Length: 462
Image (tube, rainbow, N blue to C red; front, side, top):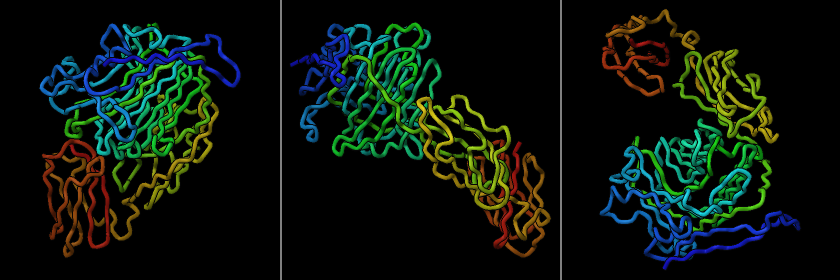
């Protein structure tokens, strides 16, 4: 049986009742097997269709959203199915898959956000303990604009992404360019019921916050807030929420068939939401440079949100230095810099607490140290450039190696630009050659070893 819950609530701050008084809250709960699409539509768009499913590409499976009883919540919940094949995006797009519910222009006005209005969105969800993410995108929730030149890019996106480790990311687009404003490791979110609460003031000078709590322990796993952020799009008609699983098929080898669970959707129009941003920005250091470093290398300094006041002198470098003028950023949150090692040994990089500040005045937390091994060939004891010759460089066709030691075995390793070993062999003669025709053009590192002596050289294959 289809049912609709419409609850009137009174928004109170302390003892003050906001003008506007009564605001409606719409709740969508699963109620048992069968008529799931009809239930969802009856709540979110009584005269429309808010279900976006891949049924057309996979009719043999049947409906891709159903309802099952959950023993943890002791209630029926919505179960969303997604299959690597043959599911797609409504038989419209074939490089991605979509199984979502939403509000849209046929939904009641009380479910559509317009400028000057405030909303609270709440929902429970669970992803499997073996959940696999795309390296491109696996969206779980979005706030999307309808109308205007900027509506192609979602305002807010909650997405998971394959990586080392996999992450849960909060993405934001004030206009048509999107960036990650916070990300955390995905592992704690897997295999457990979570509750999300999202507070929004829609407007050019809006506010936004989202908190995700682990239900069984009440542990806060994700918390972000911003008291001064654009929460609108130019010339848009309204902004609406979406929930489900929307993922890229660019790399199907990293995906698997998934079941995603949702429960207790709530949409409540409220009086102005007061969002106090007291969260310190976090910062992480990383590099894609292969180790060991033999000359300058690039690093990324990633703050969890845009910051002010961060400069080259705020990056602490031991056994090295920042190349003057190399620190750059496009959005105030992701910085790039070039580092030059001073000597053979570990280059240690860090960012201290309180060197940068976000728009709300919160100082950054300290970053974990990034340690990068550096080996300067000119400093290697007992095995200098006079002990061997590598030619030609740049290499076209054949690389030749000549060492002055005619007795000992030489071990040769070739690393590509991201540090992967692409060749290894041992040679018992002091002169040998390596055909390079099968290697891609680019920069490589050659490591030669005689007993305990090492040498590193950079070559270019043309």
